[in-house]
Image (cartoon, rainbow, N blue to C red; front, side, top):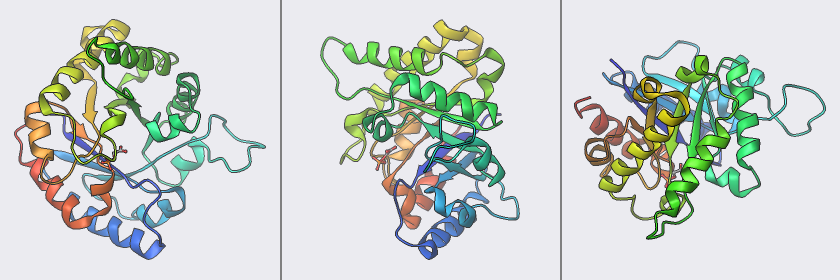
Length: 254
Ligand code: PGA
């Protein structure tokens, strides 16, 4: 049976290694008791060695928030997918709106994604519109982001991909998108996936939601939004809230 996936995006937080170790330890402790939920915590690069546990923890792994488009070489400041894999990372977020804002086009996202998959890692591919309009223009934006970002992905690699739908206007906001709209959009994401890779692949791909997810709304988004998981930012670095969120999601019948 497939599990829920919760991707905790720490962004550029916390401020010290000690805090990072503490968040990772608490997250791992809660995750180890979950039954049908996998947690991927994604700290900044420098905290990855502190977050990766020597002992394998059930239901918990470490992801990265970013990766180079290159394999190795003269690329000052960059970190490659192979380095991440060697450091114990299992997943990498690509195409997050905050990195798209810094210049990542769909083409660059597709190059990062290709590096992730070539290194044998799994990718969390983020898509989402900046704003909604009454004419449904956001659907075209999502379709185009998916089509162009996934362009190099072979059918054999599809089980290494997770789609994170994140409406940009809900990221960092006070409220998430309504669960009904999340449901509608996740169906659309699956439909685009079916157009690209066929119905069977679309049935298998996990679609998760991100944008203002917290302990009090997580279970409802899973239940009514019918998504396969969540991508919380702020709540993932708040151990009590994140623990509550994880337990609440784990209690929703899969
Ligand atoms: P938020 O961030 O949960 O703080 O809104 C989500 C994200 O950036 O993925």
